[in-house]
Length: 536
Image (cartoon, rainbow, N blue to C red):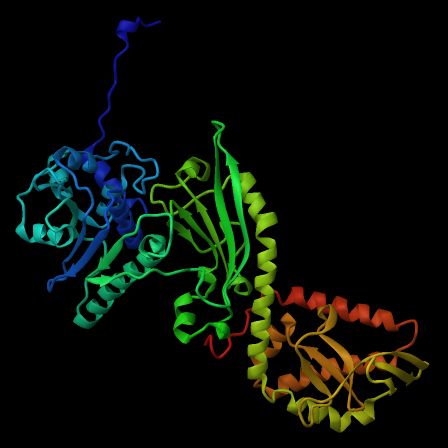
């Protein structure tokens, strides 16, 4: 054995250039990176944050984020620029890991500067310059001369009081080069608009003055104020809160905390209060699912956290999931604050108990809206079918049906098997000439079709809410040959049922229709849903 005195103390300093260059690839997108910097401003108790994203004639981009928070003296600036800065006293701080400022910034720029002052200090400025670091390979924090233009940008927000300005220069990973000015400006504006939309969503609870329980801030991007975006459209009269629960959680140390969860169903597209409200709701497969808030800051949106795949039938359902910093470890909040991982018990509870009922309601509402849209677009799609069947029905009918009681549907069926009483749907024609093929909103037990008597004629009702109709019929409603052929098949099945109807088979026929309809539902499950004119 080695003597304790012979054990060498090994201290390995990280290579500055390799670390800084390597941390440029931590997976930030621009919106997430910008939000990380705003988190720091909020942690500094800022009430106003101004973001400027500038594009020079030479296609160079500069980014400035100024706030009126408590600011930093030189000691604070050194800590802020340190990789793995000291832990904040407030555990609820949005700035959590001590890396976000540096990794988020250098993911897009090679020069990161901080200009700051407290209420008691003068202005100080420090800078990480990756090119300088790579040249000398030392953790050398630069102290550039103060720039009056930068001081003016900060004082526009701070009024000469405390505050901080983050400066990105040498931005090399945001935009490619463009030869045409029009294309350049379009791409640049898309980036700016993307940040606005991201902030409106991520900081909704902070910039919405009506929201209680958090500090309120005002955010500007290129001098335009950011307005809050509510994913749940709570101001819409027909938005519905389907479920709400407050779940208590016991932490490993025995302390108790909780998270809150709510399921919200948005209105169908035709039920929004205005076209603007409908557009701003952003109803789509990408936006359905969980919206996860940590300390009132959105850290994840869209998707079902691995529980389910996105489904157009559930596109109106959004789930609000809110927790505070005490559950950070339990939910494995990542460094970018853009992802959580649920522990097994919570995951199973949400998947098996909380979510299923709202999902069923959402699918039912979607189906009703889809059926309504299909009905509007179907128009006279079945006219040719009615004419074709009506012209040939007398030659192929093998049963005689006499109505005994139109109110109850009681009929007497006479066919080659004999004469029998039973119950068949009796209804009047809703359109002139529509007496053989009758599209209806729904049929009992979810059946696709059923025999019907319309004005004394043998007919077939077709369920427009069945997936077979929406996925197979609807896409070809303008093709009269296909519609006539499919309608003829269903009418023939209904007619064959009446032609062979007797006391022994009448229940079996209904069971057969139910089973065939269920099988068809599964077979067409993976076919695309039709797009209505509105969605097109």
